[in-house]
Amino acid sequence: MTSSRGGHRSGGFLVVTSLAENNAVGALVAVVSAADGDGHVTYSLSPATASDVTRWVAVDPASGAVRATVSFDREQTSHVEFDVLAVLDSAHHSSTSSTHVSVTIDDRDDQVSRSNSRYNP
Image (cartoon, rainbow, N blue to C red):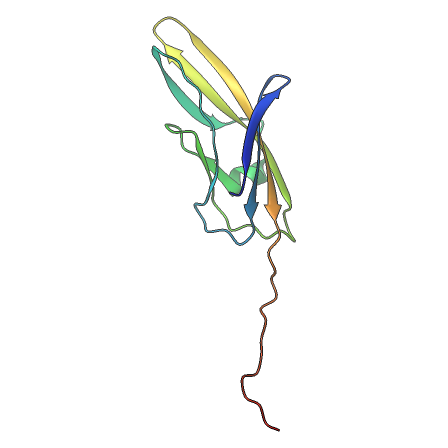
């Protein structure tokens, strides 16, 4: 993850971030958080999330940490978007909020430079 910024968008919050391709499986993509002073918060991907995205990222239900479940290749996937839900449960009320996460997969040079260390004049 190279950068992250949050903000509001219509209907919820917004996180914009990037991740370098060829990332390690399990790499941290973003962390979504919500607080309720007298209750418990559980995080999940929105049920409306596209099936391919559910194969690419996973959300820790207790911490809100979003981690890559694959190593991304920019030439195959350059951008991923999804919503994370935070369900707040307390003795007094229950509510749900959402955060839209937009991830750009950054390109890395896939070409390995090769040189011949022997010189024959």
